[in-house]
Length: 97
Length: 198
Image (tube, rainbow over all chains, first blue to last red; front, side, top):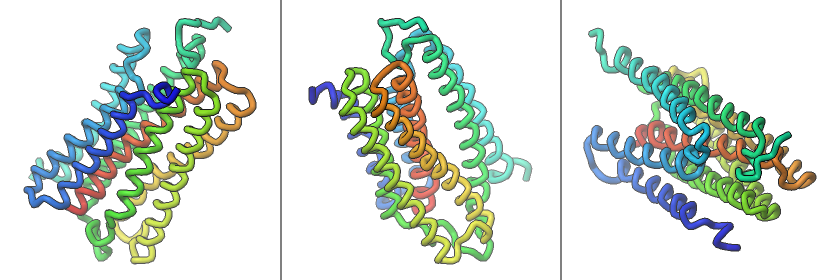
């Protein structure tokens, strides 16, 4: 019963997300350049988000709606990323200057 | 109501499958919502006027507690869904209970954090940076608080009705919501706190 209550994949996913959060802390303590730090944050955050999505939220488990769920997610990410980077492009990175 | 026994209980009727699909579509809209809030924050992060800047008010200690609590609660709500699929009602309710307690602790720490900021003269009205910070954190915190009420209501229904297609469906959808809040927090942790402190 313990094995059913604590599936090993799930426990490993949890430990991985703790390790990744700790790994992200290197940006505070290692003296790296700003761009190296941002890359570390992006990588650790994206892996953690994927862990949640694929392992914990079981996005791919229902074959009938799998394609639509990925499409919906891709569209939402497209809208979100265009909003964020389009705005940074104009207001922060000074594209118009 | 046609029940398909080959599927997990939470997907077992067409209505149930549609509700789960619909919730994923809603989460897509939530991604757009939080993207706009991150956008405003990233534009305003250096506009702190005469108020304090991020590095001056952020403290890593409480943020680490919040991160640990939310990651762990995301883990336990996942365990609750696994227990549900094996029909262990008691274990499932315990896992949901632990999830909600950790969510409550998270919300408590966040309230204390906000009070500390306000005490240090960093209020919603102080600067563009602080307005965007409070709105981003506050929207996430409000989602967590709403989740506490929602999860509590599901827990009562489970206690009264046990595991059936309706309660299983609600629990699964709640687990999607809770995992999503954890994903949003990961980005707040990385790109608000760690980026601010590095």
